[in-house]
Image 1 (cartoon, one colour):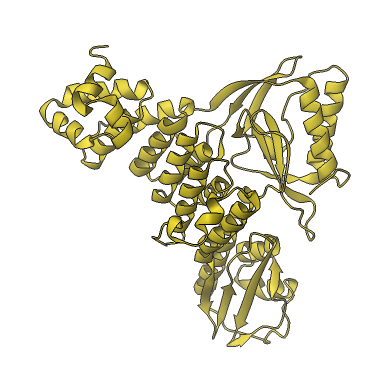
Image 2 (image 1 turned 180 degrees about the horizontal axis):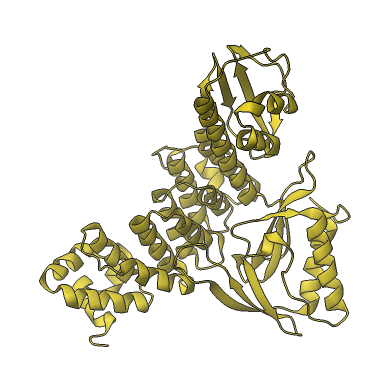
Length: 437
């Protein structure tokens, strides 16, 4: 294998403590690469294989100078499934920079959301604002503001400020005392305020009021199922509801093609439509697409922030259940946690009748001494493959959606009575027979 990575690391970057405290001087690495490129590339590969974040940072520095090897992306993708903590953050960061694939943002978000060392969670909070803004990154920073560690809350607050386009530090604002205080209710209040500033990015007007236009106010994640919206047609604001049901509004933008626009507007509750309006089909389609994109972004943020009730232990097995939609009770946010990480990272919306039936069916099988196929609960958990032992131990594989990246695997030693309790309590809450807060 040649020279050990740790010897090369000390030679190029210096004392490991200083590297930990002050960061690696990648300039020294690039200078060494100019002298001995083959040696440096060999050592960096070894460092990546040993899960050293400095090696990944080195690879990123070489890539920015156009010196990375042709298989650099493949090297990083190969280690991402087994990556944790700071190494996972850096690997996802460099992959995103090299490929532009914003799916890697969820890898960084997962570190902030998870149960690793608080220093790793801080690193994730610091990294997210430098990556593409996604619903998952905004929601993860919101969750970070509810962390038990004050410094994690501090840096998560700064992350939300950056996503909102503000360069100030939370320490310079009045809210700082509430963020660093001891009251979780105050943490959440500030987190909601800052998230509101982020979601203002999707507020605005699309189209031309003289023909067809839609105006959206900022989303309110305390009432995620409704959105203030106004529609203008032929120079007139249409009479109708001031706040629309978000799923209906979303479907309006996604499915109301040009010929059916009148029917879609009437179904949303708007009245007094002009008898006939000449609209440009391409412009109208662009307006509807922009409305869909804005609504989808905020609806996804709301899904990932929804955690009104936690059933179980997130470090082992738990469900986070979001608030019920009074106008659409058959769908509900239901995030599965397994082994300290979110196990429904792509779809955490459950179809309640089917989901409840599946949970109760499996709970009954466990009680009867049979071992069901754990987490075969419909589309919400279709990215999770598991094998269960009679004692409750679960081996799992979470499907990756990043091109070239393998699935993540693990084992969590659960107990049968623990599984049954979580499944039954979750089914009771979703069906309206359990206790909520």
